[in-house]
Image (tube, rainbow, N blue to C red; front, side):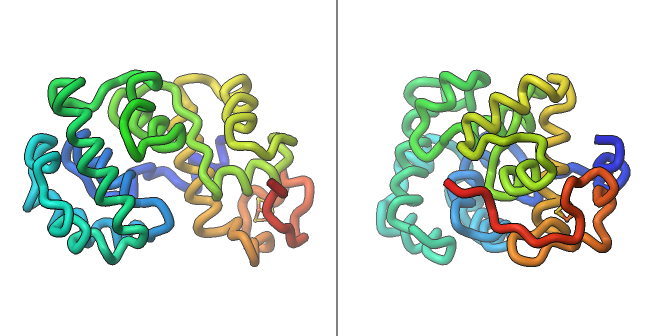
Length: 206
Ligand code: SF4
């Protein structure tokens, strides 16, 4: 954690947002897309639909066209409208602050819910995405391969107030250094602590 903190001092999310509502929408669009693509789309999305009520009332075809470039556009457009309706009708237009409530929102799974808990509410959050799973597996921090198992193991050993920052830093390390196909072991600042520096790995088997 010390090395990661020195290597990645800035843990600002690559997704652009100015409100909890905007981060939630960006996370719905992020699946199977790049942050750059999502940021391009959300600039227009938030201008057209600035709050949950406006988004819930969006025309299906307008929304599908707007989010088309992020992929899976029909499902994402549907999730955006349904999520906005749930926020408006069940949570007073605000993003709720518990895992249980967040999981009631269409398009939001545990990974995104943890992002919201950590980024918006400062709550403990282990964010297990593909990068996180790969890096902690290679570092032998975990033997588990299923996201919920990995989350549980990490929750038990990472101090609660450091979990969100740890998640972000591991994610950055997976994106920029410990990449899926060609991990940069020779330049990796964690190589001295990694059980298998210099070797190439596949991602954990599902
Ligand atoms: S030494 Fe290689 S496998 Fe280990 S964390 Fe660094 S890049 Fe990943």
